Length: 457
Image 1: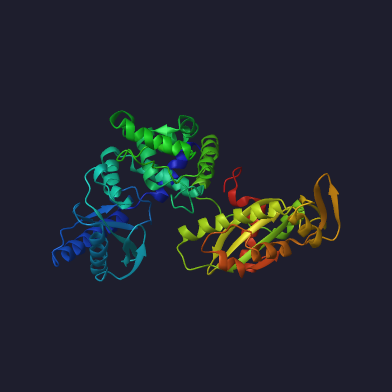
Image 2 (image 1 turned 45 degrees about the vertical axis):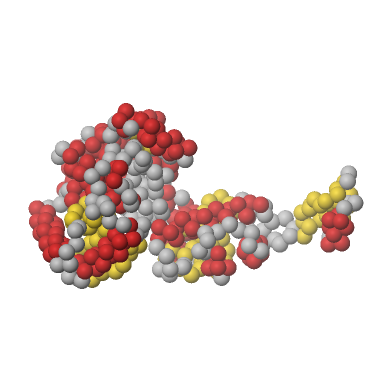
């Protein structure tokens, strides 16, 4: 099938229908009316703004999350904005179906209305990047810039978003580190179409710096500071925010997620298929067969996950996995890969290792024999000898990797996420076995299907 035919078929599935558009417009009109009515009654000097993909008409069919920002005057003290913003958000949400308090830079209200999630977020009513005081303030500026520059390429953005979702590279959250919706919109505006973005995947990487707002001329000193900072952080892409020279829109984008786009873009252009946008369910297989095929072993730690949001939990799990990798390599085990996640209330860390046992005896170098520490070493060890001035001893070590891990945890010799230390102390340590609910996860990890670059996912 040629590429245009594929794109037309995909668009039929991702472009909102007329009925869906009517529903969204009706919903937004209702929400705006409720917000304005609520704002007027206590006399708040606040303007409601819709931001995000619904406001920009870049949303995918069936994806109707609403972002309603409550913009306070710029001279409002921050504490007052937080307090009154939450109060106003709750007052609006009382008129909707249900709500809860959520937390980002400051508290906001997440409500439900007519089956749709509605975020009610307090912010400042900014007109330029110089007015920005909190991270969310730019959203109003982002909205305006996209609406001004998109020029009818809304479906091109839809294609790029759906492609990124299909290849598992969409979302700028810290636990995903992929492409944000705003980044996708800017790339389409810059290159003109979905296909041109894919064709430029290699060029973008070599060019490194994209400046659609022309800040390197308009605000050279500030923009260069941003470039320098992001280059030092070794980002795959530096895209200076067209509404704020201080910010890299791609700051959260990881090399891994860019790499997925890099390969998948080339694959799609060579062999277009709907499967890039709508991948088949990931393969299922037997993780024990994978272990047998490779001759490796799987250590899995399963423990109670602390009560925290996913974008805090997952980075801490990753940090803990790296801590185990480092500690086990010091102990003579080679960690071939790791995987983390959570299922319900349980979190897990999987470690693929080259062996389940290590050599029993090690040579332990000691201090110089004529020192106080030398005498201490001499008393503590059974077989001791001198080479030159230094003492050496044979050290009997634990053989089984699970015993080594228990000892490392007990001695606090593993660097972990700060909120996971106590949970990991009570972890169940499983060797070459996982609970039923993790069987497919273990297979996907060991077979590398979870991050498959070669095939269509």
